[in-house]
Image 1 (cartoon, rainbow, N blue to C red):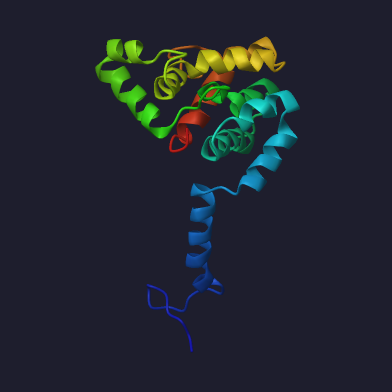
Image 2 (image 1 turned 30 degrees about the horizontal axis):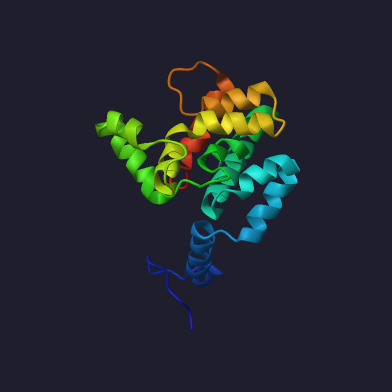
Length: 187
């Protein structure tokens, strides 16, 4: 029996398996396997840098690896940009808390419509939710400080600190920002 494609002709060999393969790929993307992502990240960073990454959620770690992979696929060979890609969101977690979905949504909306309220609510050392909001708001600066303490050079720290900055004329930073924006569903 010949299976027919949409145009009335026979399906190419293996085409019946493609929808199943796409479903498997989709679920692997939205729910990355911890082991695979973590193994690759551990291979790419120092133990001190891994300690920062380990604080993040699985989705955040997958986002960072995705940004890195996007840069590699584009041919980026700048080691500082690649390391910044792997660490640019580490400031979203610290020893006390990590930024959750509700804090991310609140930070975006309040930052746009009520920046004064965001500044009042986003305070370190308060309850966990407000501390997570603080991390969301200040993650670029905090991440640069954490990266410095983990042994990163000043350029990597500068890239992390400025990864949300506008109108900065640095080619490496523009590459990082474009790769990060291309992965926006994650981080």
